[in-house]
Image 1 (spheres, helix red, strand yellow):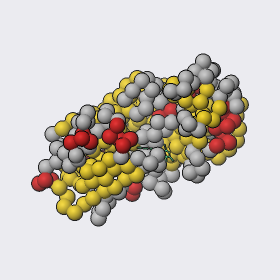
Image 2: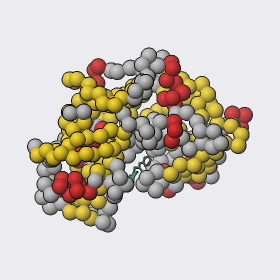
Image 3: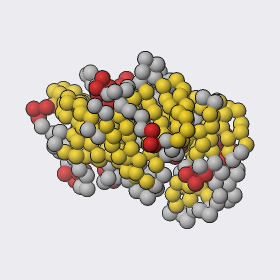
Image 4: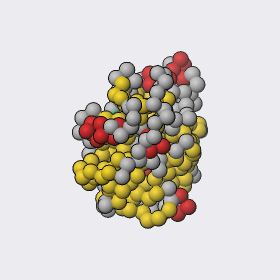
Length: 322
Ligand SMILES: Cc1nn(C)c(C)c1CC(=O)Nc1ccccn1
């Protein structure tokens, strides 16, 4: 069986995208995350005060995987932990009958405060799954064999609802050719490399290695590239109190592109105006990766493309223009 689930922006700035998932007998709204590999949910194991505003998973003790635990921390300092259950998970009509469902007992403030997000559904390699004593499969790995093709496609949109397709490529969702490159999955992520970047119509040769990450809002690249980009934005500055580069909301932002597999993958300048700040300027969608040693191609990069993640004998990534 193949299937498709909507990806709805959680707010007016596309901070994250939420997809409806049936977990046991509840429908939760999860953030599908190609940068991690745990399916975790807000649950009845948590204090009631943490559940206000959230939909949550009503655990059934009979389904608990006794003695199993999980604990995840993300690069931005957020995290969660809890216990593990085996239950039915349905995404767009695709059913995993005994999927490892990681029920939270504790979650960090970033997640508790975001009342729209009821958990995450990881879509990176299962080698990054945090469950102990036995690592568990992602939803995609669990259903892989029942899909017509071993792939899922990501169609995030700018200030609009997109979708995640499982098992098939939807020709109505892209124009032109799909450009495929091999994925570097050696670190558990969907890794890609670019051979150049461009700001406006000026191109610079450089190696930009990064991971595709639907669970990250912005596009994080090496500091020299960030500086070169905002040098082209009048009135822009690094604002440490806001935590990144800001600029006048009236500024014209140049397009940015990464050349992957010989093809320029363009991020329209308009997409790089992420949101207004509390200080009356606007926060940039391109920010520094703080020397973590790789780039994070988050939603700002992804929302102009249809991106196929194919787990064949050689994992591949396909890029097409929306
Ligand atoms: C924002 C960021 N900074 N640094 C160093 C990294 C690695 C990130 C990406 C990140 O943490 N993404 C995330 C956060 C919560 C849930 C899912 N993905």
